Amino acid sequence: MALWLAVIVTKAKSPSARLLPWIGLLGLLNPGWAYTFSMFGLVETSASVATLLWAFEPILILGLAWMFLKEQIGRQLLGLVALATCGVLLVSGLLGNASSETLNAGSALILAGVLCCAIYTILARNLVANPLFTVAVQQSVAFAWVLAIWPLELRSVTAPNLAGVLYRDIATIILSGLLYYALAYWFYLHALRSMAASVAGSFFNLIPVFGVLGSFIFLGERLTSSQRLGAALIVGATMVVLRHGIGRATKQTAVDARQGPTRRSRHNRRTSSRARSVLWSAQGSLGHRGFEVEGSLT
Image 1 (spheres, rainbow, N blue to C red):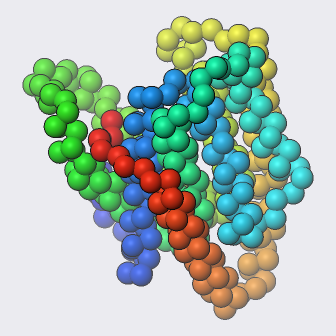
Image 2: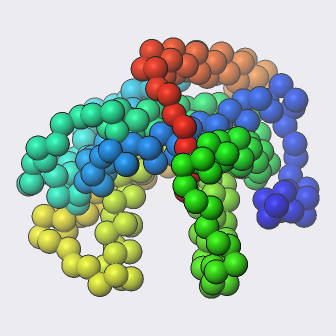
């Protein structure tokens, strides 16, 4: 509701009708399918293993951007992503404390969720549409997915007594939804319009840092020396990637200005074709895994 009100107030330009199915697919990929897979996977997998699996998202984005968007991945960017991934392992505590838990169905489900998020980034990179309108459509489709699978959840659990929920908790839920599902997605899609997908994906390595920092501030938890080292590696690598990405975006903007609208139009058609290739490849991959999921998003 808030997103559509913002669309009306800002008079956000609606995209062409042929783009609406692709925008709706974004909502199914993330948060729809990605969070569904992840929530079921967390039931069978520890939080530390889940953190490790999600650390592969920037690597997946890097690979998909190279294969389908034909982005040039230099040695510097590849090395920085690897360095940041080492930092993720340190922050999660898995680099120094090896886990004996083997990969199971829960881990496979989480990896499916990670793949959905990576495909989301590749597909969103090629959509030429207003970011605010895109997020509004995307989250509406995701909400429809929640309503579709909700009856399946009600069969297995008792519905909570909404009358007993404090107004403060309701306000917190609404605020968190606006921050993450509206503002964060709008920022991300807006940034993708002027940044390579491989560069944007590297910023996901900052998630564990923000998580640990939030635990320190709000929960009083303390960092170990290895976690502090890991956080420093992630922040340092991301800052270098940021400078690299801004330079690349500036150069690309200058090239686009020289090319003119005709060549940009041809480029958009080519990248749209590559996006469809990503989609078909992902559908085949997910279908091959044969996941059967019943449940809901939380």
